[in-house]
Image 1 (cartoon, rainbow, N blue to C red):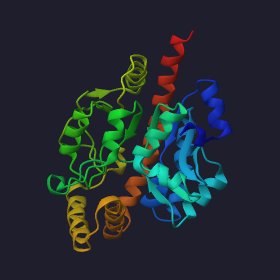
Image 2 (tube, one colour; image 1 turned 45 degrees about the vertical axis):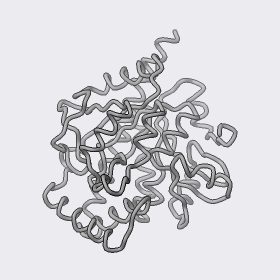
Image 3 (cartoon, helix red, strand yellow; image 1 turned 90 degrees about the vertical axis):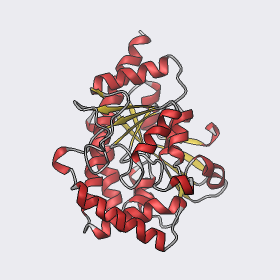
Length: 310
């Protein structure tokens, strides 16, 4: 698929000079957030990465090409698009065979980032094992992609609507390390800082995260890493309140028989409606913070990697 890559000049220069780069997914823009919030978030995320000293690379598909890095005009058009396709590994061939827009999921972004030589991405929340997966077998392709692709993901844990414990078990099976950025080993719960579960690798600093990623690449481990970054304390949601809303949203999804790739966007939209926009506010704050921290980790990773080349 490398022949399909269109790499922006800023990202191409950063790759050539071994500068830190953070890949950014685009499904959050095409399917996860309402307009005009999505464009505002796209701009804030890129600005957060830049403020850390790293280069942002928003990834999306358009006119049969995989775009690594977006111009201001491309971001605007992507955020205005009504018919973008949600793109994971299985969807690349279909979308690339046409001329339309594609918003990459975490799995799709990890795949494209690896193809272009980018080692880390930042996002809001990881996909995972859906509640009731023992019956539906609905498990996000994000997990299997991380099991086969050596890219690190900075996220606030797993999306709250999913089964966090089962997701951590699948990540372990896939050989994906999980670490929590900060002083606590608690694995975050997206809108909340503590899911009641722990990261297998415990609490680490940003510097340690950069070193772990560098060694992961140096020794040739073929799987990725999850750096779980808790939502900032001043933005944390009320766990009991949000859990009640999630139960209500899940029931509504069941009543409407909404399953598969459409389920997460529907449930997140329903949560935004039920919470009066509060869940969107938390989501925006945490993804912006993850982009900042992702940029800091990318910078530490670049320092470690470049020291080997001296």
